[in-house]
Image 1 (cartoon, rainbow, N blue to C red):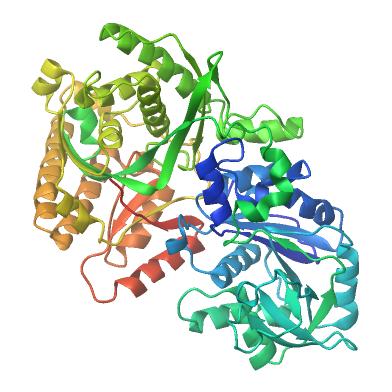
Image 2 (spheres, helix red, strand yellow; image 1 turned 180 degrees about the vertical axis):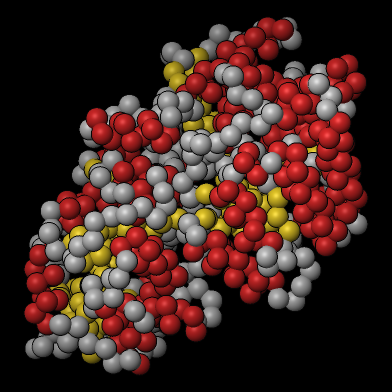
Length: 630
């Protein structure tokens, strides 16, 4: 499916649902484990269905609303994509901000702007249409009438906000506060999260995140954001629109208050869902482990050709496994990645066509099978006890960030803990080869690089010299020193990747066959990749950012020469082109679908990266600064 797919043009309201934040509630649930672990707060169940479904019931039945867009962060994007497509919302209407943590978020105003830009790209001219903004983590309990609100907006003109009477539990520094003329319902003033003693801290009314904006208001968002410094909440824009621009806003008072599960809310604010936790086994000890995605810094793809590589794990993307004792051995399918419940045959067709038929459950089963065989071969007598295991992952599919091996590594680590095994029983040097054997069991073609760096973690230099591999069954692996890794963490590394990657139309490489017959060009190229990895190791130990960037460019140019443009893919090449035209180094971090970028030393790195981000996002790519992890 093309990113900018055509959709039927209508004249109704465009709804933008904001669900890109990072919340303490999600962190609390992550720590507790259980069936709610990993679910975005806007999709947490309330009265037996996701929060967003309560909104969707109103929106989908309202003819005045013609289009819905959901803005998500990169960590939870797949959850919202799956939610949307199962409800008939086009996949292109789910917008990925690229943020993987609070530090990388750009603020709500930027998220709104990104959603509006996607709407304009897909729908064409929407300059005459109202926009409805709502927070996916805002719940209503009673007396909610969306038709009445839309009719009020039409009657009054201007823009509409909701409000309710301030309660004892409403802390102004956590809320948008407003003053409304009760006679006319005109909003007289608005203050975003005022501190005690500041203007607005004594306002009588609270406004939740739900607005219907007339065109001349929402069209000011981009201008406001372009002049703003730092991350801006949407309330700061409302202060500007109402106070400075004097644009008319009308208030509609809610008989029943909204309930907010905002960024600062924790489990204690989630009391109305306590019944859902009643049967949860979170008090029973659980084993919870993670394995991180990786980016190949240098030398790839020579790891599959007796070469050398340098690779590093990244904190942004991960796979996790939760495992606990049980009477029988159970491998639980993931509701998103191993679907078995669909809204219709058409929904099943869509998921199967786009996601394929192979989720993560097969990886769990193959890992357990090979683990049994490994322990038998090493003479390890495993105790007779069973477990239940489930997995989660936020690693984007088909972009070459080692998502499959991350699931295997995470389960392998969980099994080691469950059976009380250590490197004394299974040496760390052979663990990557075990992980590779699991994937080979499933017919997944791969090299050792990903498995090595995911087992060791951090920044790793790898030498896959043929004789050593043949003799020992593993290569020479060097985890680089802490001070070197600390320097690497300061570099402005980022990745860009396809928002909607697909295997469809990919041309398979003949490089392996050419290697097998010792074609000179391929043999020399693999030797050159290995040399680049050695030189990159030296550049890193000398803290030479520009040299590392130059080597990255050389790595990609060599790969392009022997693999060819048709094999690399036009969309991948387009990402490289966008990044390189700004003087920034770029290469593939894996097999394709994503691009790794690194700025050369400059005083203007921030503005340079901002420009690259804008260019990439304008063409449907996701931009993500990466955080390295050990």
